[in-house]
Amino acid sequence: MHWFGALSMDWSLGIETFRTKKVDAFTCRLLDIHSKMMEIKKEEVIRLGLHRSDYMLDSETDLLLQIELNTISSSFAGLGCLVSELHRYLLEQHGKDLGLNPKSVPRNTAVLQFAEALAKAWNEYGNNRAVVMFVVQHEERNIAGQAIAVVYFRAGYSPNDYPSESEWHARLMMEQSTAIKCPSISYHLVGTKKIQQELAKPSVLERFLEADEVAKLRKCFAGLWSLDDAEVTKWAIERPELFVLKPQREGGGNNIYGDDVKELLLRMKWEKNEEQAAYILMQRIFPTASVSYLVREGICHKNHAVSELGIYGAYLRSKDKVIMNDQCGYLVRTKHSSSNEGGVAAGFAVLDSIYLT
Image 1: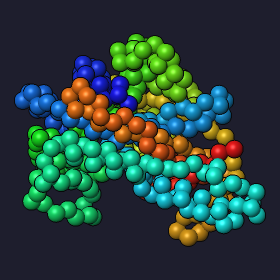
Image 2 (image 1 turned 90 degrees about the vertical axis):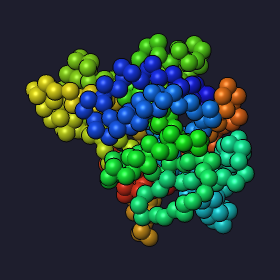
Image 3 (image 1 turned 135 degrees about the horizontal axis):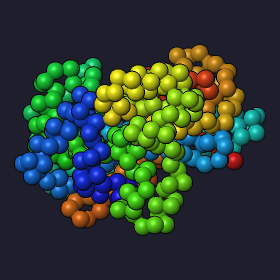
């Protein structure tokens, strides 16, 4: 993820991309903080990124196509590893009866490598009395009053995490501090849907990668378009089932599908406002469904299901020195094939494992 870290430091790409600011109040506030950091020439000497890039297997091409890349609160590194251990244990006990090999469930080291990255960042900070601070949602509690070496954002990706000006003031204070932020405000912003769409344009990735590396990455890109593209927008109105309309939001339950895509696009077209700058259009991926048993709240359901694969990564650099740039395990989420959304905490999916054949 070296190139993605470099992208977070090259903000020329974000200037035109984020005219979204005009219509998206949440992104606007994030950009305000970033602008203040630019004004005071705040330099992030040490940068830490804990990512998860999500993919689905497209049934037409048999390619893993990228859904999104998460740069803030890349969740389930811990629980995903536990689910893999659970499935491996069950196959050790019952695999012979089922004709399945527990060794076909690959080891998942995401939580160990994320912890290693946080520890290395703490060590790079150079103050052995400092601590690592987790920013969490309001149901949880933190202890204050200590020097902070690393700030890890487990929350802060949703407008709901900023119910008052106090939370925005706290975010600004964190950005102004010398603590290592995971992610910093610029790193947070390069993980947005709008930047993902911008990276799909010709000649953009070439600024950060060699041609052969760009070619490999583009094989994983699904179609991504700005709503400024009149031809694609017209196509989406005519065939809305082939597209997903995505706002600048994380956390599940935000995307727009089917006839709702058509209705919203038509409304924005006739009102002729700038609301469309807050959305991107993405090719809808149609993965192959298979019969699965999904367990939620202790109840087992047999359904046709599809899965989404997430690959974790950790990136740490100090000035020009890259200290860590590792792939860190995986996450599998499985949901009913009839479900549009795929969030586990949002109630749409369950955690799963890979079984290699």
